[in-house]
Length: 431
Length: 68
Image (cartoon, rainbow over the protein chains, first blue to last red):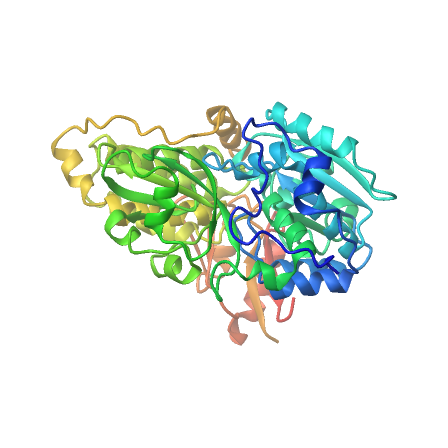
């Protein structure tokens, strides 16, 4: 299947040949670095992906071969959707791939579409990401894809708009809000047909596996967690940005890759806003492996790592994030709309020193209750974040009551227009 | 017959009839939305569970059979 081409011996892999001037890699440059697009059979490709051990990089970490197979065996696939809207505010890896390495992502999309028998590839890009949009449109324009239709669709803002059922809704002309499942998109999605929704990084990895093989893919990383991953490292580090690292890399080395911390760190937020706070003492003993991360209640999620310095206030930053998550509810399910808002208000109280005794227990009751009671995972992700915030910063609630906190804002990035959406969400639910 | 209760949380409008009919398995949260006991519905409560499904004004309560 692969032309016997040997892949990059070490890192970078995905980011090989990345132009330092930030221009999008042209098709000619892309083929110079990686060779021409191979044309494996469907079973051949899916097997290679299976042996590689590749798992989805959009946050769910689902085995990619299984996902490919579940759509392929249903036949009559409707589309392969490149889910490039990247709604996690602190993440920029997908934007980097789509704007500067569009052909690598498109290769993966074309390969996956062929493997599942889909007649169409739809690349979703956030409508506000005009640079990325033109880079992707430009790349699509120069590719000849035979009978396969490849088109670009803009995606709206909003944290939940990238959820896969919300994607299907939006492509069908409705608001980008999750639907009750079943059916999931792999059963019935775009135009009522089995649909594969895939993260850009996952597709880029497929493009490499198709060329260099599963054995090559597994040369980096560990047996349990093979390969490399893109991680957006931000916060109190000297060189925030997107880095490609092998699984199994230590947290210390991850931070060093981003220029090291700019001040002593108190905690790391692992996985983005649906992720988990880990205090620095525990964080520094971790490696980028599922086992290590699971041992402290985390997963890599959307590949985001935020370093919180000692001069920041964990309660304040957490209050901002949970406030944002509450505002970003699609507004369809009572437990999410009311539960997250109540939790966010309580957290704002903690940060302002107004926390009452019993508030903490009440918040923990709400996080336990809200799990699994929304149509999508939004309340579950928020609950996980809040519980980790209480575990990591809970002992500061008391000190905030006694004394006003004067920590400067750490500036964790938040999406825009959240308050407008929240007002709309409550209006919808109130009878 | 093995079956469990599920709430379509988008359709649910917190009318609360389900909790009234089936308090053994359904309680309401602080805002009136149902919290359903996980796991299979005990056989002696299946009849009441079906009634609760029928009486929900928004068809939000579902009785899902094993394998569905």
